Length: 356
Image (cartoon, rainbow, N blue to C red; front, side):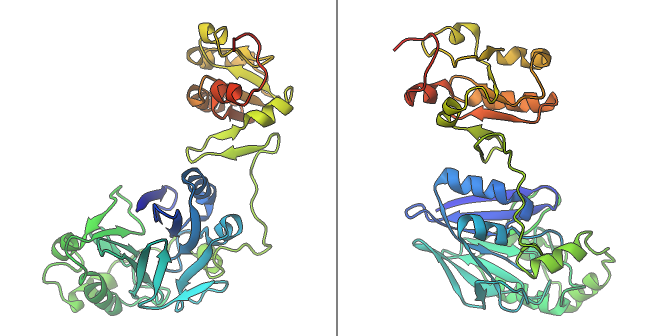
């Protein structure tokens, strides 16, 4: 099985990608609206077919990317039948099974943080995704959205602490950079509900947290009750329009050799190889300006900020870094030539110099 833990720094939200390695079928747990492009890029790079976006609950601190991913990847939206959201493709109840390839997640209802909280347990019971119900050495708050401290205590003790002690638990958030815990650890060391702490101990703790409401709550909750669908159904489009670009999981905009061959003259071509490579056997693209990567920051002023730039190197690595350097220097319309001169030559695009 393929597994990735992704992070949104703005809301400290973890998004989890799970996929069956044999079939490429995948699910994504708790996607974030602003990270939908990142998630789509990762799916494309890994050649995965996203079947479902799964929500552990209706979030109050970020807007879900479920609706955007349904439009871009064709995935179905699945979340609790008790969450109250509209536009859900597959309402989930306790005991349901989410299949992806030969793997599956079992749905466990774990209300308490909200009335519709779910925990997703992997078929082997070696991993579970607890959302905001159980965090690392903590838990979600219980003072709004139908929260109930007693209910949360029972959910954790009957649905999560009954999993094998070595089951790894992956939370919906962490604000300290921690990534995972285990059932045994939380049973022993969670200061709110581990050890010998009773339900009344827990309720007293939770009743006296005194937390402010999440800053985005008034925006996030109404949006998430529509699965992240904008009021005007407008799909945000901040994709550059000056070229046919795709964004990689690394956040680099790329252009393919065929498009550049057909549109020479649209952009400045900056070759960031060394001089001997520029004049070497791979040749160079017509009109390319040589500025070795080590000199680029110092010589960036030689380039026109009013015209787009496409960076080129041997295989696309140094030129990807060149786009970062140029962005720091104040350039905005920048792209990397995917695959560099190796792919350019492999696709029989024309070169100056070089040799067969």
